[in-house]
Image (cartoon, rainbow, N blue to C red; front, side, top):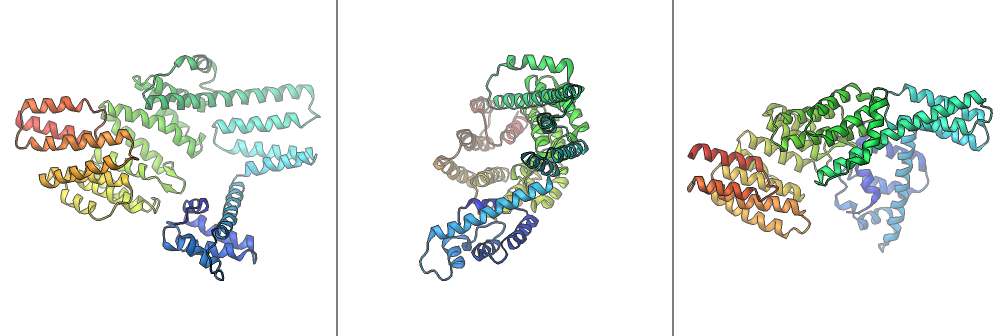
Length: 478
């Protein structure tokens, strides 16, 4: 496949965007540069995966330069570069067309450069009107207001003194709002990253700003209140009232954010649930499911055009843990087509197999896992873990041991596998055969010894399932 930035961009286009782009190229080029049109036509035949043989450099060259007998890479690269410029131009024009505020603001800047200050004033007035009609009240809102009023102040020599004082006051107020929101936003990111990496942080860095916000700004600026509460969930995780308050605020002020920033804030709430679940607080499985479901229904889980495979997986995992099997079945089918085509089949099969496993249909699980040759190592390793669990449940011990032996060799040979995941898979391969042996040779001492061994592994793949199996033997044997 031709490894091109242009192709990588086109791969992310929705079907409607791709069709619009093709029309845009035809309209823009007219009868000029036919080679670019030929190239796009050839690429279109492999949309959206762009993985066929016709995407190879040599094949594309032969189509674009049919009279040339010798392959010249620089020539096809030059045409691809011309197509990339059209892609970028299309995206910029599309963005500007969809953003009336930016259009008016930039037009005002253009008038200012021409010395047409009255026309600039008119554009700035329109931008303010557009801004106030927008429901969003995130940091960008205050930044835009700051920009507009700053331009009004700098480019209006006729402002009377009383109006100037009022204008400066408005500038300072929006600047303060912007500063405090952005400060807390990145404070949340700072603490969240350190929490994920298990690093201690210096809370004194934020003491002064927290005190100022608590005294005067929380109720006045809901977005600031949301970031403040998110920050509190991060630094005081033992206080569940912060999480409850954060949910309440987010529910009341969803319209204040664009989808990307809303998703970022929900990450803090979702991570809080994950930490609670890791502490065996099982009520937060439902909390996390509900948060994800809200984001899904409002299309905030979508990464650009598609639903990410990780979010697809998370929804199914949570649904399975809540035993919502009918919901999971419907979700699997409904959202399959909303996955990126390059990963769709793999993601569907592994998650379908997981559902079958959770419903104790182990033969169906094995059949699904053997259906497809996984190109992605992540999927392949997940499939092997699930396959091992299915062999265990069916008491196919010989097949289980053979699989774990080959699995262990595979992960050790994979030099790109992160150490944490390598150790998690190795621990799984080591512990599962010992649990399988309990069917024939089990004692209280052996179980206690295995439980003590497990404490030496920070992460074990499918740890909850392993603990469930150990507890089953405890109940049966003792």
